Structure formats: structure tokens, C-alpha cells
Amino acid sequence: MLDDVSLQQNDSSQTVEQLVLTKIETCYQHAELRLNRTFPRPHINFKQRGRAAGSARLQINELRFNPVLLQENQQHFITHTVPHEVAHLLVYQLYGRTKPHGKEWQQIMNQIFDLTAKTTHQYDVSNVKGKTFTYACQCADHQLTIRRHNKIIRDNIKYICRLCKQSLIIKY
Image (cartoon, rainbow, N blue to C red; front, side, top):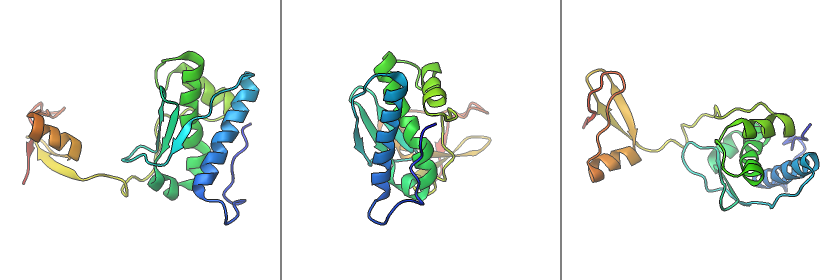
């Protein structure tokens, strides 16, 4: 079983980012022992934005973590999110391109890290949620992200309600 980095044993000199780095190294050492091969260590940054807790950039061997969600969910983030993202890089190193949460990724999560292979987190994202714009159709109001709003304005893109099939119109 993969040893967890415990926040209870954290002395005051070790930041939560350092705990993430320690957990990443622990994951790699555990995978190397179980798979009997070595893996290159990734570049790591804490600049992930938006609602994603983390992401793995496969081609450049990089892990990105959301600093806000990390601070708000420290123990669960370190125990689950960090191995989740490491598993993506390991799968890419072992198999090349696969489905993001396919059988290979699930196998790494289950058999190497002894964790349930969950594809999404359940963290409260209210502190990282970006600005939204209200659009309406015949049946409901819809909150669109700033990215979608800008596409409508800039590129004349139209979004359609999935229920009533009507175009969404901005509410001022």
C-alpha cells in the first residue's frame, strides 16, 4: 500500500507545496518498485487555474496543481489528486497515448497506488469559479463562462439549449 504523506506529522517548516513534492516522489518510487523500472521526474508547478485541481501535460512531462484547491483540501488533495495526476504521466510513459481515464490509468490507480480510480474531484470550487454571464433560452437561464461569452462576442458563435434547442441570448 502506498504510504500517505500525513499533515498531522507536518512540522511547521514544511509547506503544503513541499508535501505535494514529497508525495509525488513517493508515488514515483512506489511505481518504480512495483513496475521494476525507472521514470523521469516531471516538472511541477502550482499555477493550475479554474476548477481543475490538477493536470498532467503528457508530452512535456509536467504536473500542474491548483494552489487554491490545494490549500482548501490539503489532506484529500495530497492523498488522491496527486497520485491521480502522477498516474497520467506514468501511463503515458508506459503505453503512449491512451484514453485519459482508460483501463491503463485505472490499473495504475487501483493496482499500483491502491486507490479508487475516480475521474473527478468533489471539491468546493466557489473560490476558483471564474466570472459568468447569464444567458437565457425559452426554458431556463444559463451561466456561461467568460471564455464562452467572449467566443459569442468575438467569433459570433451560437450556443443552443440542450432541452428546448433554442439559441441562448444574453440577459443584460
